[in-house]
Length: 305
Length: 265
Ligand SMILES: Nc1ncnc2c1ncn2[C@@H]1O[C@H](COP(=O)(O)OP(=O)(O)OP(=O)(O)O)[C@@H](O)[C@H]1O
Ligand SMILES: [Mg+2]
Image (spheres, rainbow over the protein chains, first blue to last red):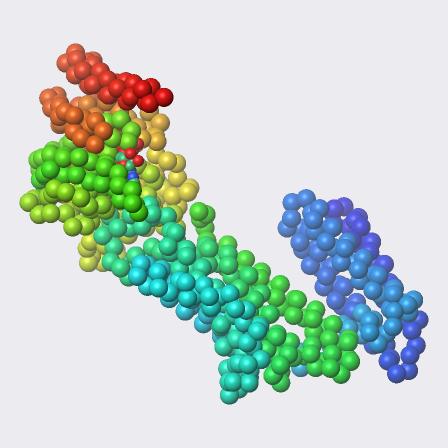
């Protein structure tokens, strides 16, 4: 019990809650302070998450360190803005205001989230599916491999960000453009890695399958694919981050809705509290997606190379 | 049970401009149902010879025939147990065995699973069917590999130092297991078994093919009656005699090799 109550993060937590409940020193008619309720709510969620993680970890050192750092940063932010009014409000909004954005604009944020996720998931899964499928087919056929690999290598070196604006102009709708951008952003590298992995696969695995007289389709999809699966899953989080990056870049250019668009529009109108809230939201979504990948990995991959 | 014949077989590994002659003018006949051990020092070409029979590598000259037909690839009448563990690491023991069976029959999943279970029971792994290879010891993995090789009911069994990396005690158990499974068949399988171990070769085989570098040095018939068990076998004076000559043959080869290297130095 002592482990969960008496520690530095909890002390900071109490200080933070108390401090944010006190009246702010800042009194600016043009930029009124939002209620502290959302900020306090966020801190409580962080605390619950912290206690949960503390319970799950063995010695909890890292969990405590991370919580301490988080609380210390929030405390500093709170002090410098709403309590001591040192930083210019217009550029660095108070945490109360930033977190209140989630209360005020939840509908906009949610619909942007939905929109971005649809684009992200379609582009990401299509690229992954075709990249792996073609990679296995090409990688398995020496002639195709020798012809295709150098070409794919060239394509995969061009970052999708560079032709994103062009595609947004070229495609009829923003949706198709951003799905295509996400697709191209990871398709070439997935294809290249898969061709490479198939080419360098452990010869003993292939021989074991050969001597069992497997047909080609069994070799490709019941031997090579499961053999590569751990590697594919390991590459997912990098690929996901690249896709979110390309999507956000596309949203800066042509979207009318979406997570990245929310941030951009807020910056355009100098609503920095909304911009920061949008950035925090993207970080949370990305973290959640990465955790999903980790769970998938634990379920699907029960063996190591 | 099938007849194997190698005629004037030579094999060179080629990579780029390099050519390495691994087998030179090999002639060998193995009768149906015969248990042949191939023995010889490291690097003399045993695995290469077996690779030809497996259908994974092809002769540069000469012929390799099974029942008079040239080997053009792997085939369902042949099963292989490799020296290295060759199970699929993402499949449980049972699925590994079932996977092998499914490639050669059109039987239902239920029947295939039954066959797999049956053979895992035979090799004493009834309690480990759902374990992944990584959760099994080396000896257990090799037993699964043997079960997989036997479950497809091959006519020819090709084994490349299958017990090479297994401790002496487990090794004896596996040898006896192999002999009992082989002996239980009405129509015995033809077995080609590569080993380093003279005792193992004497215990298991009808005939020992003794290889020197790239060629067959000598063929030795092993006359002892079956079933052979370790206990009666090693006290037999005839056995001791044969073993002595085999060991001296083996070490003469090794001594020559070392002598050759000394000249080089
Ligand atoms: N893929 C290959 N390419 C080139 N040379 C090879 C290849 N495989 C084997 N060799 C060479 O052929 C010779 C015979 O190899 P092989 O594997 O048949 O020997 P072995 O008798 O099985 O030896 P060990 O008892 O150590 O397994 C060795 O000198 C080896 O270096
Ligand atoms: Mg070998």
